[in-house]
Image (cartoon, rainbow, N blue to C red; front, side):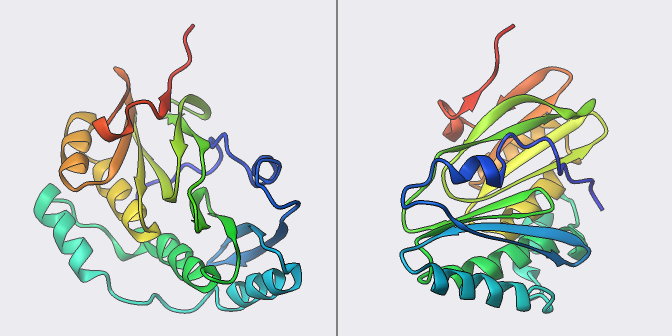
Length: 219
């Protein structure tokens, strides 16, 4: 299983709360599959929002919705990498949570083991850190998250962050692409229409669709 970066993200639920219109969020944290899911959700009826989050919590350990055979087959065909079922379970849990919250809350930010998912009728604009593969607590850059899911994987000297519409896609593609090195990760990710930021000894690079959304500090 590919190591997942869990602590380098610049974004935190506490920091996110201050920037969302509509007042303070309803927040929850609970255990899912041996790790912690945290959620901050906004809505006019805070009681209803809280009940929706509780329902997500109660359903957190249900089996995966599907085998994801088609996605895994596509990744295998494009990259030659076989994605393990265990690499996408967190993404699946986030997708199921998002489906349960959609239409009930105005917006919500979910975090499961360092993978994020934004639920909302409109997009967001929050910066997520790009991990330095040599120093996992250091962020080399940041990418603007606007919706969907963001997940980072690290292997050896390579860090790959994938932004995708679903949690499963972000988890699966990051797990596969991190094994290929940055050149192929950017090429194959772009061809598959997922957004990719890759960091290695050469620096930080990204797919063209992220131009203007990646911030690299100048020294």
